Each structure stands twice: as structure tokens, then as C-alpha cells.
Amino acid sequence: MTDSAPISSSEVLRDARDFSVVLGGPLYQLLRRTHLTNDTMLLLQRRIVAISLFAWAPLLVLSAISGQLAGDGVSVPFLLDLETHIRFLVVVPLLLAAELVVHKRLLPIARALLERHLIRDEDLPRFDAALRTASRWRNSLLAEVLMIASVYLIGVLFVWRRYTAPGADTWYETSPGHNGQLSPAGIWFVFVSLPLFQFLLLRWYFRLFIWTRFLWQVSRLHLNLIPTHPDNLGGLGLLGNTVYAFTVLLVAHGAMVAAQIAGRVLLLGATLPQFKVEIATVLVLLLLVVFGPMFLFAPQLSRTKRAGLLEYGTFAESYTRQFDRKWLRGGVPANESVLGSADIQSLADLASSFDVVRSMRLAPVTRSAVIQLACAVLVPMLPLLLTMMPLEALLKKLLNLVL
Image 1: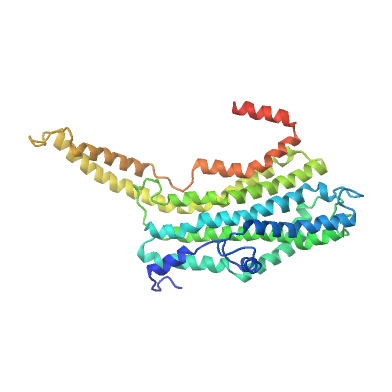
Image 2 (image 1 turned 45 degrees about the horizontal axis):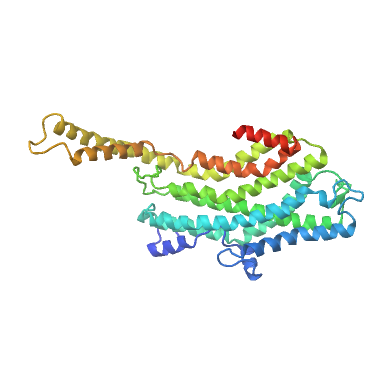
């Protein structure tokens, strides 16, 4: 649909009401056919159990059959591979749970932009085009095929083997390197479990891209912002709450990083301080991914604030001059008393309105939101502190910080 195509507000509202960055795509249709989800992303427990066990249970069984479950000649037996257990029994469930959370939290946003009259009538075609483009990309078969290809050609064969594989004899590979021999469990791990995990991650990054692109297109519209709106964002305060939708997703990433570090600390003798740069980098990148799209609205909010200060400043100057002439320069009628006069209350209301304009923020981002989402990333890493000190000493230090 072109920007100039005629479209009714009811059609746009219908598209906005159904817009979700999660509810669609070939995998979603497959899950529907296998009764692992429904039209509203429910049946979450069934979905988590089925997908997690599909990835993890064969590894357990095949490792037991091959005698690599608890040791028997390998440096990293299956039961001691903490990274694998957390990846498939913690991170995968969190990635799946995040779908339901994001779906529910973001579903009302597009409709609210219309119902709150933030989208001008002349921009309805462009807004609807943004909705339809995002939905079309979300449902793209080609996109998911390319993700699967990327997982096998880049994620497994290049990134994992070169940068994340431990480089020691494990339950899935002996003599790691070019001549490494995969065990039966390793074959399932490398060609089924790991690609499934990486595909779920990559699909989330694609969804975040779709959401960011949609917000970018909305930010380019001439939004109907009101500088005196009490949310101090001209009416865009609803976007500030969208970042909390990604809390579970950030917890999943924190758990994933914690699992990788734990594996190297417990099995390869590394220490937690060695990974402080990596932890900080991951934290910053994740916060930028979530909060970055909010700053797309900064130019328009800045223009609205400047215009509001000018307009309300002119209006305030006119009103206060009239107030001054009337009540302080002898212009008040003889039969009118200052007690109970609405002029004084109006002056106070005008001052409050001007303060609202002056305190407008330039992005739907708050310090509390940044702190909460940063904690969501870091909390799964707290158990790693036990690798540096006993639990009792750690609790004493935490209590000293709190008390």
C-alpha cells in the first residue's frame, strides 16, 4: 500500500488491534498445528516442556548409552556441563516465556497510538503501511529460512566452534579441533539442539529489529503531541512502559552469559574477574537494544518542547500582564474582591502548565527502568560470586551493603 492510498480509520484500527511482533511466522504456524500454542500464545507450559525436552533429553539418553554421562575418560561429562543444562532447561524456557510477555505487553501499543489521537488523520496511510510491513516481515518464510541457514553456516560451524566451544574433551566431542570426533550425543547436540537454541535467539533479534523499525517509522510521522501532557512526554508516555516487556528476554540473556562463564570457571579454572569486560559489554549492548529505539522520538519531542515553551511563554506573558494591570495597577472593578477570585487560581494553573512544558523529557526513558532492566541482566550472574567467596561471606557483604 502506498502512502497516498485511501484508507478508513476503521481499517487502520483493525490492523493496529491485531499487530504483534510475536504472533506469526512459519514456526508459530507449526506450533499451532502441533497444538503447542494457540491464537493468543497460550499453552506456554506445554510448549516449554516439549521444546526443552526435545533439545535436552536425547543428550541425556545418548550420553548415558555412550558412557559419557558422569565421566569415563572425558574432561567434561554431560552431568557436569552446567552450560548445556542452563542453556536448554533455563534459557530456552525463558525465551519461550518472553514471547507471551512481549505479545501481551506490546499488543495494545499500536491501537493506543490511534485511540489517543497521536496519529494525525493525514498520516493514517503511512501508519497502516508501517503496521502491514512489520506484520509481513514477521510472517516471512524467507526470513526464517535465512535464519536457519545462518544458524548452521555461521552460528554452529563458525561462531560456536571457534569462540564458545570449551576446547577440551567433552561428552559431545573428543580430541576437539579439526579432527574431533563427535559422539552420538554430540551429533544430536551439534545438528539439532544447538541450532534450535541459536534459531530461537536469532528469531528474537529479528523481532527486535522489526519492533525498532516500526518505531522508527512512527517517529517519522508528524505526531499529534501535546506539550502540557502530564506524562512529560507529550502523550508518548505509553512507549516508556514497553521496555518492561523485554525483562524476561534480558533475564534469559543474563542466564546464558552466566552459564558460559560458569562452565569456564568450574571446568577450565578461569576466574570471574576475567570476564568483567564481557559482562559489561553484554549489559551495555542489551540496554542499547531495548532503550535505543526510544531515542528515535527525541527530535520530535525536542521540537514539541521548544514550540510549547514559546507558545505557552507568550500566552503566560499576556495573561500575567493582564493580571498585573487588573490587580496591582488599579484596574480591578470596585465591586470585585480578590477573595475567591478565579483569576488567582488560573494564574496558578498557568504556572503549573508551564512547569509541565519545561520539564518535558526528550525520550521515553527513565532511570528506574534502566536500573530495573540492568538488574534483570545481572541477577542470573549473582551465583557466580560463590566461585570467589563462600556463601556465608557473600551474605555478610550483601547485608553490610543493605544495612
